[in-house]
Image (cartoon, rainbow, N blue to C red):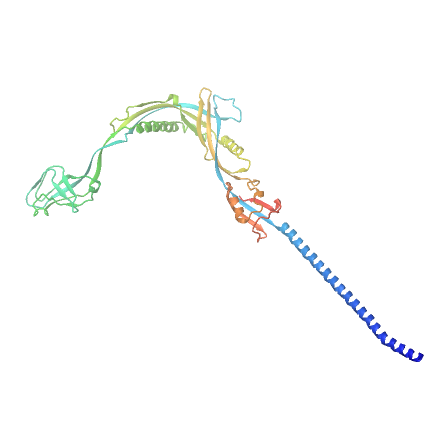
Length: 415
């Protein structure tokens, strides 16, 4: 029996042993599988983290590159506007102001007396009649003389009726010149040279006795002239200019060394005599006038310099001079003190100005966040801008970024 027990136990041991080893092996395999899964999961996690980091890095690089490279350049073409100004200065007569300082404008200040007589036409019109008149030659190709009384009718080929002015006797085989006039004068009766029939003659004679004109008939109105108020005023104005022109003739040669001479009438000395009044029935009327003309002569080189300086100083801070027209300065006498030999002259001058390069006409803060069309609308609203060009970098950019640095917006003024 013990022997049997030992054998049975051995068999049981043999049966149990292989199962335990398998279990251990299986458990080890399962552990290895779990470890492999954990290892693969960790590797995938690390890979995803690395990929996310790379993507984030690339995005950051792109953002930094975007804000580094993005630029907006606006090139402005400014208006060039004409600006006018004026300046008042004194001219000192060199004889009466011998001690004038070096910066003073020294020249000649004097007066001369001018007297003129002229006739001026009256322009008032009163139409008292009208006429269409001309001349014609009467031809008599018949064997007998042909008398024609005044008002004898002459008929043109298109049916226009004229009459002869005086009674005539046309000799046989001869001709007579007569004055003719339209029976009913109008502009349509001013006809070109033509042949006339004489409807008052027997029909058998009309081809032998007829009239022929060599010149066109003239239409005119009969007018009575009279003086209107404008005639009086115009004559005074014209006489003043004639007096200034005469003064210029008298002193131009004497003061030829001065490149600028002004002439003005001393109104206190002006005396005029007009032998007519408004409504007078006259074709023309006489006017007499005499006056003292103040002559001021000087060298304008100093004046040109002073006017240019005045022009520049008067410009706004955001404007600068483009050109100054010193050849078109005009001079007008303001006042005169002939006893002291001082004349006050007003100058008028002009030049072209434009925006300075440093001008801040564009408020860059106002265009941040705007698209191209909105930027154009803003620039169009600026009065000093004639044109512009907008350039975005990168080229695909379509609006000004909201977070762009102010320094990335470049404003350039093109001259």
